[in-house]
Image (cartoon, rainbow, N blue to C red; front, side, top):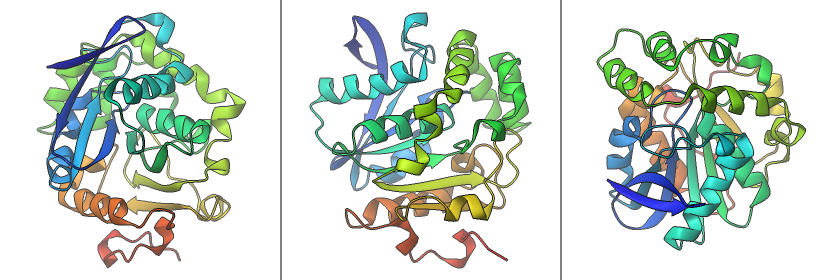
Length: 262
């Protein structure tokens, strides 16, 4: 287990591979662990890091750090500790919100961001996130799958306050406006069968900056990286391979990846 000290508190991370850095940030359920298959695929050409955010996994349970702003600052502290100057971010749920907020504040540091299960508006996040215990959220979002058991184990390590405080932050004006002000290449990925986060309407997607693109995984729920791992990994590699500054709308995706617009 690898750790760094940020604000004199332990932050747990794991790393695979060599090359340009990519940081994976987990959601409101689970920990760094569900990123392992994706990290393995990315590590062929990239140095893949995955963190446990404040209050999750093996990172410190410190209520003073549970706001969305503090979770975004965790990214900054980690980059400083590791000596990383420019990075790609891949976030899911809570991690997606933190990644978007950090990118908005630090466009010169983040080259691109993939936001999975990102609630484009607070209303698109199911109210159950605000009331259910972490283990119950794991059962609800992952169902009776082989991956669900590990999610439940990781959920037991979660401080429920880390979830509730971050949800309060979704109403913050800066957080709400992050997607509309994005200057870096941004790929939004959602599962069509996600019970927790509703995919935005096409009109809302088209109103976003040219650098932002949305893709729907039609056979996935809340965890596209686990539900359709090979497809997700191929899409991630294509996104990371884009030339810096290119819009993800230029991706030549295979038909099975495309968001069909009728």
